[in-house]
Length: 380
Ligand SMILES: Cc1ncc(COP(=O)(O)O)c(C=O)c1O
Picture 1 (spheres, rainbow, N blue to C red):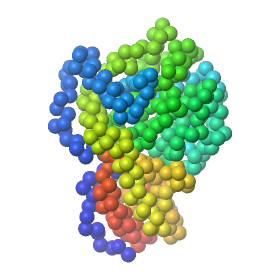
Picture 2: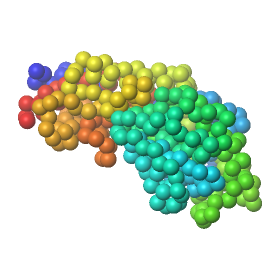
Picture 3: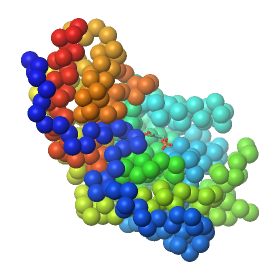
Picture 4: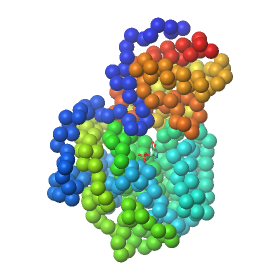
């Protein structure tokens, strides 16, 4: 039984699933070129916004004919803008296997009041994509941040579908090679795998999504911050950096710096490799300790970013209290911040493994995890 505290501490104890750890090279001084106190519509502001769009395209391999926009209200803003603007033209299927996907179901069923087909799976599982009708519009979350269950690939999505796919890729972007030909709308925020700031969302539209925008007018009113068309035509300016309303130029600078860091470590391939190496630390730890396991049942669906873990020791009778106590003990020691499971998810831990986290910090955390577990078991 490990009763003495381990000798090594993670150099950075930030394992939060959002906002996530900043890139290892981050300093406040690195933001000194921010266009602060300048108009975002001045040449300097516009060029930074355009650069953010084009570097995103370059790293993620987004096709040239897809539009990329910076929109208000983080990922939630981007997703709601897409759903409010596009849905209602065809039947809708909503897929959810954790809290964020469930939130989009609520939007569509209760607020837009669409009679959607809702397919759900319990925490740890994923919806059976073979049953989904892709001639409907289909809304789903690629990586379920609160269950650590992700889509292994886009194989089940047909390229010749009639409907649009609307994908919340918040905790998958920059950690997964997203198949653009399978995705009509993709959203994410800067605060996850890149360790950027929240507040702005990214909205990526396929040509078919643009066609829908230009040929369909929803029955409900659209607030200004959702409006992407004028007189039946796409407002192209949004997709070259002429944002609908005022962005934070500090957050934009921070995003640009994060993108540069991503490029410096090998772009998307390097980002994925780091996330894979990080999640492998937890794979190994779970394989060697029979009291901890992934919440994701099927190994193919295990997330390489938001790794969700459950305690499986039979001596634990109150799982929620136990997991909270372990997380609290680690936080008090200053070795792991914000690793408790999401409030709506089953009891356990959630440890962010995206590329901005150093593998050496996860390596250093593992003995502490064992120490905290043993301490809490002893205290039962
Ligand atoms: C899958 C997913 N969707 C949406 C959100 C909401 O993101 P934001 O608060 O940036 O709008 C999150 C945040 O954790 C998420 O993980």
